[in-house]
Length: 413
Image (cartoon, rainbow, N blue to C red; front, side, top):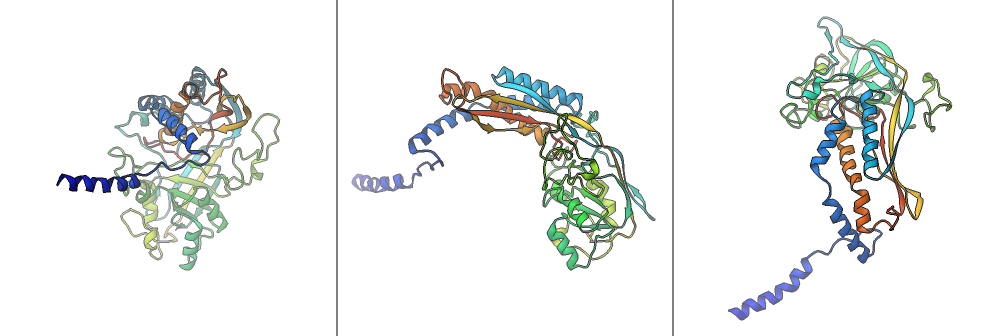
């Protein structure tokens, strides 16, 4: 019996050796250097501390810190101090960019059953951060033109190209109408862009609970999903043409640079656009007429979703202060010892329409913890060339301030 067991074990040993997977090769590494790389990565992965990441987040997202605010400057100066304490060369680079802020926002359903949209996010009693409203930006979509329009309403699903093809198959036109689109399906800036190209005069974007709310999980405060009055803010600039300041394409927004007139900027959306909550969208969508939409167009609200046009007209008015504000980019650099002209760039933005805890501070807080260990970790591991203790190539870590994120005042932001 023992001989049989020993023979069986001898047969199984080669099979076990074969089935034990060898480490996958790493592109650009030899087997020997790949082993060294894995050892270094293992040491580095053991360094980050979740408590420090949480501390970073509470510091940076403790107050609303939109572009141009005192809280944003305080965050920038704190970041510089942190980088310097870790051995980085850090500084603030300032740029004056076009940064419209809302003065007038009106959205109302006219007719026999009028409704005036709240266009605000009430505080969440369980979350003290939502009580702090200054200097928080109210719900709005930056970089859409001012406008005052009254027109029928048409539902366009996600407002993407395929959705307009479906509208055409059903004989529905948005020409001369205000469209209402739900967030998702594509970049938010495409929604007013495609609406304008199809003849619409205004655009409303809302968060349907099927995509971002109780349809996918418990909403705030029971869970992390967007509540009834939560609104996603964000830019609708046509960044398919160019990113950055709409008035200085291809150039930094610094003194002396020629700026376009606002009317000549091709990235500013040409119809008034506003984001709303599903609480505000509900009475607008509920009174749409016309054919029932396809199953893939239906959200989670308790009525039959229809194409429209609406029985009654909708009035949309948006007016902004089209001034400039300083954006503060924190640039931290470790100069390379062998190839200083070669840059390795890792970065994240750290501004917020409101507190921005999820977007972008969750990412920035994690990157900060990584950067805190760069000097000591890479020096000990032998990645740097002693005695200079610098990387072979120059590492630049920008913490950028830019009005391009999509955020809500609720804790998920």
